[in-house]
Length: 429
Image (tube, rainbow, N blue to C red; front, top):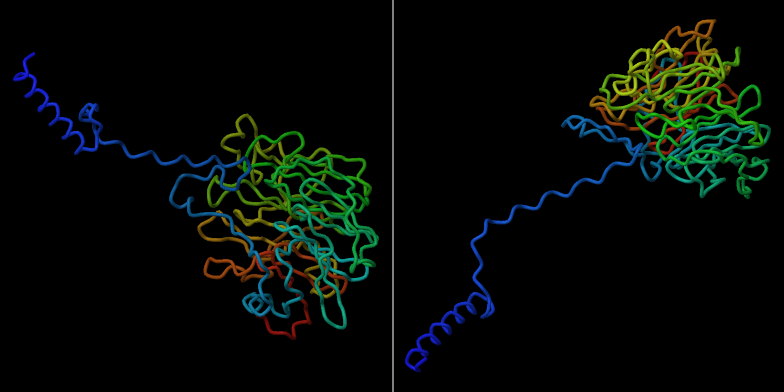
């Protein structure tokens, strides 16, 4: 090729290289073909909820998406900020603060010497409320525990039910300042977090009764779930005495018949108004099945698991306690301070709904029974824990003291209130 022919070609190549350089491309790069703009990245998928999460099964609707569990306050409310003056009782009753500073105060028991023991659920502690120099003092008598919700007291020994084991502390009232570590007596329990916290009751047969909840909102439970068990005081002799129970956080024995009554929290996400929670009784230990997951509130078949079953197959509730009212602690009133109509009636702490647009429950109600143990009536006793559709407190348990007064725990504020009666001379709140 002649020099005259070569030079124009070199100049053309040089010009192309310069243009590529101006574009920030190397000289040997090829110009890219025209491509459509890149699509926006897809939103990251939400991680799946674990089995038993309270929002599992939540409808994908704007109303339902706004509902979420109400978390207890992480620090106990100061005594002067508690909602004592917002709570309403019938004429003649008075409610006052008994003790504060017990973060997440839940279940309560009284010892032989008057000590009031209080458990927790979301923290690791068990408390003792003691009288000292005319004042009440709160002590931590056990810590480092895992959901120590259930407690019972018998002949000087405090029994503690954690999520996966049951322990005891002997001679506890003589060692409140230096309590020994709990001794495990029973640990053959599932470790599911969902409905894993226990309620503990001492039966008239001197056995410990407790529930193993369903590990879910609604599912087919394993043979080890959704039941009531009882054991001897040393942890031996386990028996399953009832099945078909979603979750219990309160039980007590009728003072005249020794029959076990218990509250039950029904499933979520069928609707805001059904199913209702229940009050049950165990008339046939070892035989009764209360319907979970096939049937709810005694007369509604589950849309998924109810196929092929009739609600008539299962033990009916004593009465219904309202939609998602979350009935927890309950006791028969066996004191002699309150009016006669309270004798052997059941006082139930309804913790209150979170999965309803308009909150329901958040109170203490009285259930009266007929002589044969069937339902007679229900009426409000303590109200006011819900103000303007928001919680100012949440009752978790009730306890009849030896003097006939009533304690009410408030796990939202970490406090315990005392209710007394003076034959009508006090004005109602």
